[in-house]
Amino acid sequence: MFFLESLFRNKKGYPPLDFNSTAIQQLDKFQEPLGKICLQTSDPVELVPTDETCYIFLGNPPRRFAMTWIDKDNSIHKFKSLAKDKGVSQAKFERLAETIGEAYRQSKGEARFSLDFDNKTITVTVSQSLADHLKQVINEAIT
Image (cartoon, rainbow, N blue to C red):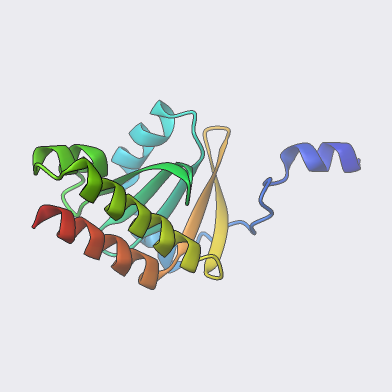
């Protein structure tokens, strides 16, 4: 019995996200583009939902990751593409990516939950402070 339980348990041990939670209501707004992203990647997925944006870490933050987000219009944006489009230098891009990694490290104590989607366990981080840091870094890349 223990063996079967260990196969189906979230590897990081996060409790399941409550389907009556604010985070579920926030994620519901981004359902279609989130589904596309989750189906297209084999990397671990971590979501940081807010009322107007859903930030998405793909990979293993804070070291090796890509960051994507979905805005209130359900448009998908990639941090690396944004930086390239805005002419951000490689040095500045690396500094901004390190800032994102540091913000992620600082959020380690924030509430994290698991959510199953199409045979994939997704981590959902409920953290307004992490979302605020991510928004700040994106704005810095734009300007």
